[in-house]
Length: 344
Image (cartoon, rainbow, N blue to C red):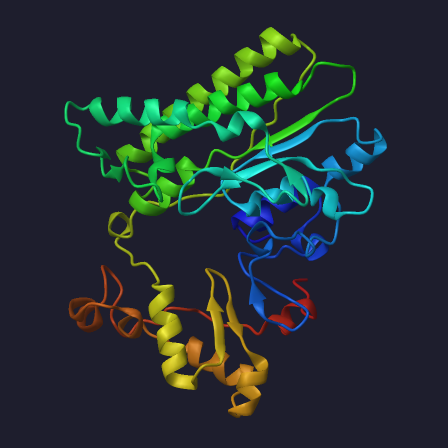
C-alpha cells in the first residue's frame, strides 16, 4: 500500500488495494512498460481497473445521485472514478488546479466543472488580506509566496477559499436536497504541500492545520444548517504521513534527482524515473545496452551517502551519525520477485 497520493486516494475511492485497482504509484507502467502519470494529467483514468464506490452508487441510482470531487491534482480522481469515460457513467463534478495558473479546471469530456469554481474574486480578496496581515504588502506569507500563481495554493487564504467554494458548490448544485444520497469528495492539500517545503514541525504547517480545521468547521456548519442533523455523514482521513527535517533527526534526505543522474551516468539512458519507492527501468533500452535489472539492483545496494550528496562537505563527511561511506539502501529488489515472494 504505497504511501503516495494517487494510490491512497484510489484505495479510498474503490475500497481495494493497489494490487487490485492498479494505481500503484505516482508513475505507473502502461502497456508498453513506459512510466507515465496514472491519470494522464486528467486526460484519462483508464488505468483504474476497479470502479469507484461512487461510480457504482451513481449507476445504482440511474445517475440521479450527485457525485463530485474538488481536489488539487488529477490524482484525486481515484476517489470518484472516471465519470463519463466509463460506459453508462455521466459527467460528475470534478475539479483540480491548473499547475501554472492555479485556477480550477476539469476534463470536459468526462466531467463537469461547477459554475461556482469559475469565479476567483473571493480568492483574490483573501490573498490580498493575507498579504497585508503582517503589515507589509510584499507578496509573502511567512516563507511562502502569496503572489506566485504556481504556489499561492499553499497559504491559509487558499484553504479558506477552498472551503467557501466547496460550500457554494454543495448549495448551488443541490447536494443533499432530495432523498437520493449524494457524494462529495475533496482534498485540502496545503498541509501536505507545506510539509514538503518546510517539514512537519514548521509554523507554516501549524497554520495550515489550523486553517484546515476551520474549513472543516465551516463545511460542517453548512451541512448541519442546510442538509439537517442526522441527514449527512462526514468521513475525514489523512492523505499520508509527514516527517521532520533531516537535521532534526540527525539524518539525511535522499536526493532522487542525484540518484537518477548517477544511474544514468553508470548505465546510460536506461532509467525512466526515480520515485520515492521505485526505480523505473526502460527494459528495452537496457537490453540494447546489455544491462540487466540484477546489475542495477546490485549497484543500488552498494550506493553510498557520499555518492548521493550534492555538497562537498556531505560527500566527504556524511551527515549526522551517518558517514559518507554508509549505504543509502539496505537492499534493492526487482519488482518481479515481490509477486512471487511470501512473507510467511
